[in-house]
Image (cartoon, rainbow, N blue to C red; front, side, top):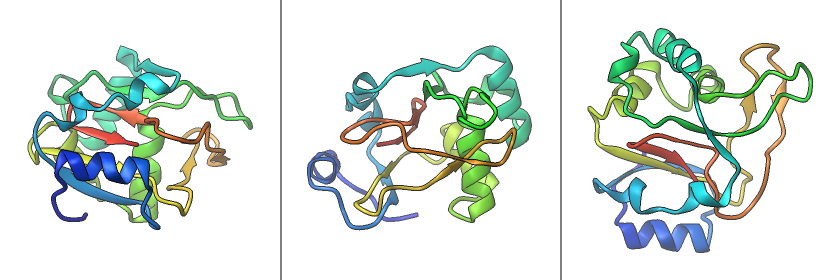
Length: 153
């Protein structure tokens, strides 16, 4: 994970993307101030999906700081509806993030974080059900998943 960004730096990176996708800690309240979720077809995860994510992260579902939102996309191979779990398993499996790190971020214990998609196209996501890669849904300023303390934009 990378150093702290100010809110103005976040906006600058969203307008002029960095070369490489990176995760940064941001000041409290930054995620709520971003309007990227509104630019995408986001859906709120249901209770069963939240329980699956909590089980994967070894935490109580009530400790996950929602709302947990995810881009409304289905896997083209098996039609599984993607959730935060798909992104979490992909991040852990690729070594981009550790399970403990994700647990602490999604429970708010480590502050707020944002992953800013770079010109490299961003990090891939694999379907947790069939394992196939899922194509990126759109470009521009958008979020693929977010919570009250974390966003991918």
